[in-house]
Amino acid sequence: MFLSISEHSCSLRKWCNVKGPIIGLEPSDREGQPDYEIRLGKDHRVYCNCASWRYSPAPAKTCKHLKRFNAKIVAAAAAAA
Ligand SMILES: [Zn+2]
Image (cartoon, rainbow, N blue to C red; front, side, top):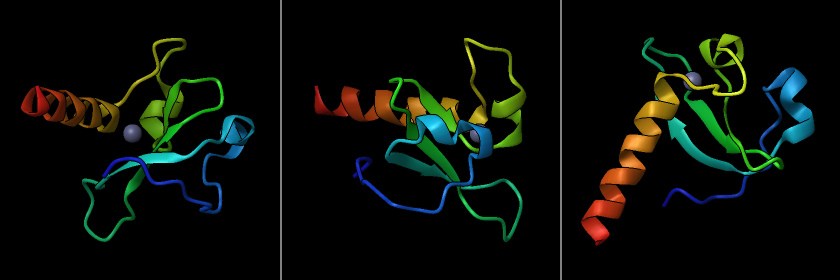
């Protein structure tokens, strides 16, 4: 399932202060690269550790991984309804 609390070493750098549990992993588009970590921050926002998320404009920060992750949640919710 999506909810798994992990004590991974933090790869979020300056976002470490809001580090929360990893709620999902999205595969990188590049072969051999580690999965991107989707995290629920202590400020209740959802974080990704990719570069495009970091550089996307606040406060509506997003990236293709978060969009894919959200689409999966929506699909799972629709299937459960
Ligand atoms: Zn991302």
